[in-house]
Amino acid sequence: MISLCRWQAGGVQQRDLLVIGGGPAGAAAAIRAARAGVNVTVFEKGPHGRDKVCGDGLTPRAVAALDELDIDLAPAHRIDGLRMIAGKTTRELAWPSGTRFPDHGAVWPRKRFDTHLIDVAIEAGAEVRFECEALPTVEAGRVTGVAAGGDTYTAPLTILAAGAQGAAAKLLGAARDPDEPFGLAIRAYAETPRHAERHLEACLSLRDEHGTPVPGYGWMFPAGDGTVNIGVGALSTMKGFKKLNLNTLLEQYASIVREPWTLGPYLDKPRAWRLPMSCIKRHGPGWVAVGDAAGFVNPMNGEGIDYGLESGMLAVDCFLDNSATAAEQYDLLVGQRFDSFLRTGRRFSFLIGHPLLLRTGLRVAVGTQTTADITLAVMGNLVDSTTPGAAGRVLRLADRVLRIADPLLRRTRAAP
Image (tube, rainbow, N blue to C red):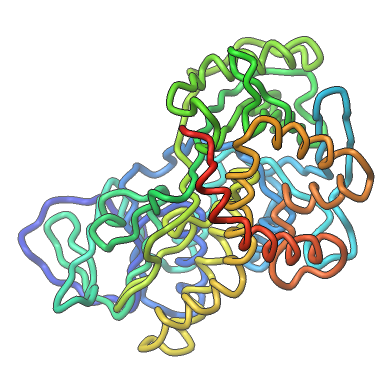
């Protein structure tokens, strides 16, 4: 059911579940809930079919989550691997097979992707109120629902899926941890005859206009529709981060790829966005945060769609299991699934904020087939606490080593 947010006088409506935000995480939660017969309402402050600035890449992990939601990926452009470039070294690697994730990813521009997901939620029976900003209502320290468009909605659980932390997150104390790193990125679209390529391309050796190595990467994500999503992202741990000009960085990167990609002019004005990579509080009485709202973004690639889909479904599964304990159970389970890897990534970002360590790290990352395979797993969000093999062992070792080194890394961090 689609509706627009209209100002009305003080109505109170009861629901089983409320979702603030209609992006991938919120839509995944709504689809899961509606298919289980839950009376769920989603509040999306943008219009139906709104765009979301993003790199548009879907990892094999995201494809697995979409398969679980029974989403048809026919409209997306299939991606079979990643081409990593570091200095003069280029490695083209296929997504691994024989794992719990598919051996392919996709590129699906967010305007079409998000619209498709929310339409599936509506078809499943979810009510979606567009152009409607909702804020949590709190009574005696517990979230009892939301206020939106002059109405009050009540429910046993409210899911915060509003993307990068905004007004609703601040109200609940779900803001970004100021002591942790975050990222900034910018992207544009351009025409290219290579639009149907089956590999993403990531340049790991970015430099700013002063020649300073940038902890981040530039990307070319072919969309299969005549265009490529071109963009760059950087971490806040680099020296001079506050003075970093993203438009200039994008132009420098575009000058490198323009000829080999036969790149046309930008089809739109480059748009930038912030990437939250932490969250002070992701649950409380009557509410949970999912996706970007919970800081579930990989610090080593800026990717979070897969985590958003998974956490949205997990929140609903906990609600279906026991609505009274859903918030606490969700926090426990999502922590077991994501925390170790994301914590290690944040600590690693302090390490590569130092130019010398960044250059050394890049040589190691693509220096051998083994290390390149591990880098591929990290860049594809294919690593977590249960990952077997070399990538899993490296993650667990890195978690232990960086935990010990963390105080030193923070004391010697590059001043932003």
